[in-house]
Length: 157
Image 1 (tube, one colour):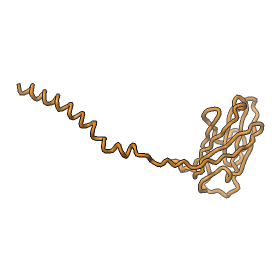
Image 2 (tube, rainbow, N blue to C red):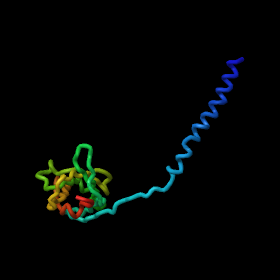
Image 3 (cartoon, rainbow, N blue to C red):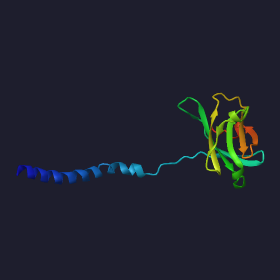
């Protein structure tokens, strides 16, 4: 009989204990749902013609992020016109002129309309660096264009 009463108390206590566990996080919910300011830095956009392809480069006006490997990376987005989507095979970005297609830089990825690339930025900038955009079409043609890095860099150098 003693064993049955203990089982009864445990079954009843389990219910109350689970209800208590549901109530424990409640004091923390107001902070969770309180509105927090969302800071989005302004966007820098530049139009550039890369051979026959007019594209728009965009980035946020913020300093490059330091990666765990120690290098500084800056994210750029490349907007391609819808009429040119089927003609573009690849888009590459690099600080400094690429010597060949093998050293063209970071390959842009993402959806066909807006691709993004993480570009390695040198630690010390002289102010004369250029961001090179290399585009390859499906016919094997390679087109390049550059613009001063200061125009599309943003943030502190």
